[in-house]
Length: 128
Image (cartoon, rainbow, N blue to C red; front, side):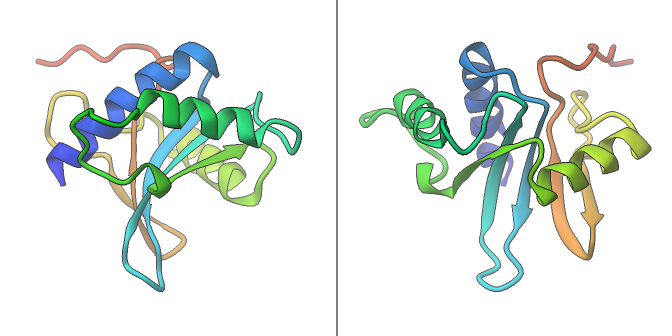
């Protein structure tokens, strides 16, 4: 999963340059047990989901090394129930993932396994 987490972080950084990301996280689907990367932004809404997904596909263009399927990426507006839950969770429990490599970004949110990223908009953390 480490390679997938790193690849997701690269996607997050590039996506954030075009569409600011408020929260980003991997969540395991309770039915299929597959992991999906969620990118949540205030700028994503019903009228531009296609633009947001187009940006994901542009970043993950064919021929690049991939650690996950681009169709395992989901874009959400911050008003969606899942995005609101994730933002509330982050506001309550603080920093997303641990940039020092200790994998402390894994949590259980609402009974589901979730890995939160530190988004580019969040303040930097200094590793000891």
